[in-house]
Amino acid sequence: MITKKQNAAITAFLIITMLCIQLSSTAKTPSDLSKASIIPKPVSITATGGYFTLKSNTDIYIQEGSEELKQIGQSLADILKKSTGFAIDVITTNNVPKPGNIYLTLKADNSIANSVDEGYELTVTKKLVLLSANKTAGLFRGMQTIRQLLPAKIEMVSKQTGPWKIATGIITDYPAYSYRGAMLDVSRHFFGVGDVEKLIDYLAFYKMNVLHLHLSDDQGWRIEIKSWPELAKHGGSSQVGGGEGGYYTQEQYKDIVQYAKDRYITIVPEIDMPGHINAALASYAELNCSGKATELYTGIEVGFSTLCINLDVTYKFIDDVIGELAVLTPGPYIHIGGDESHSTKREDYIPFINRVQDIVASHGKKVLGWDDIAIASLKPNVVAQHWANVKNANMAVGQGAKILMSPAKKAYLDMQYDKSTKLGLHWAAYIEVDSAYIWDPATLIPGVGKADILGIEAALWTETITNIDEMEYMIFPRLPGYAEIGWTPASGRNWNEYRVRLGKQGVRFKAMGIDYYQSARVPWEK
Ligand code: NGO
Image 1 (tube, helix red, strand yellow):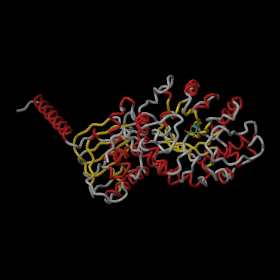
Image 2 (cartoon, rainbow, N blue to C red):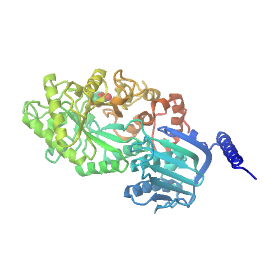
Image 3 (cartoon, rainbow, N blue to C red):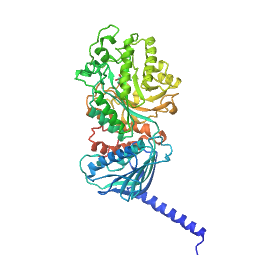
Image 4 (cartoon, helix red, strand yellow):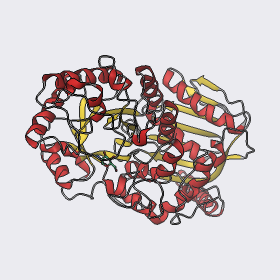
């Protein structure tokens, strides 16, 4: 006769023995989830030492009741179908599916701790891949982890041979910062809708959630404004070096916004003012203090143009432009630029920025601006994007504003990797892949701590970048590092460990057809 006490002891013994077997097999077998090269690195990974195998009869089951969930299931199926060649269906269910399948569910009780909107929990057993989150955004982020756990060739668009194995275990994950973005300057050189969508796909793959579009500058105006049609028609007809330029019609812009939204990415549109505005001054004579339109500009100087601060029409123009943009923009922010207004007197600049903040607010949006705006009186909810001036960042924080971190020395994607880089500039620094990774937004500027920071944004200015291949060369392999800085807690980041994980992404870049900079500081897996 076994007593209750003995029974409990036997059970405990069995559990400990099983755990030991599992741990030792984890160490020996290559199926070790904790060794997976996921970028950004998840907050917590527990490996259990086995494999789930995606087979020709694998389907994606989704919990009933959410159209968005269906879309996420479908986008995962679309990716997996191409490379595996399997006919993967998306099936709605209320029960845990039978072994061999992927299951996406929402937690009705919001029980995933710390996750805000984007956290998720991924449990892989030999039988099932179970992805759950409080919100669909979390499922979308978690889906990127599933992609990265599969062999790199899962990203190819032609049929490949398996096996398609995923190491078993549990991942619990959520972001350190709520804003993790990239900026693309489409003014200096224009990038069409397809190129922008490609960039959005890359951001999504690394769990980034904002794309800031620098839509206007001296060299080109890139968004159709119906009440001021010459802005796009004339102001959009130039670019650096004198190419034909281009602009997005409002319909095309809506497509970009929707494409991003489907990937849980917010578009932040920027109209740079009062400087960097020559394309508008060339399009409308009445915007100039002289009453005469300027010439279109195709050089790369900065700081020579300004709106005419004391004209009423200036504010009518801004109100119309911001008004149309606000309607096209579901996200909370409109970026007003404000950088390098060297041709605007300080006594004009300050009231101008104050007034423009009110215009943005009157259209129901929040203001983002380069850190230069900190010399004005910042209204509540304004975010200052730090790029060069530490004093400005401190002044912004002193006024209660949050900071978006884009320090040019660390996070400018147009900075050359080293002296041999043919594209790009180096006025702020040469930024090798390690330098791009080794910094902490929360300790970079004395007096600006984690609580003051909204997030990080890597900026690609395009004076020297003319097409998607050049864009890819400058952003890869630095982009995944910025994604990790934004997502993974600083305490979990270490260059020597990261460079190995990054090296393993090389095959993924290749599978996606990305031509990247093969930095000698990274052990690339070919
Ligand atoms: C500066 C400048 C841009 C340039 C960029 C080039 C800011 C905020 N204003 O950054 O106009 O394109 O450098 O690196």
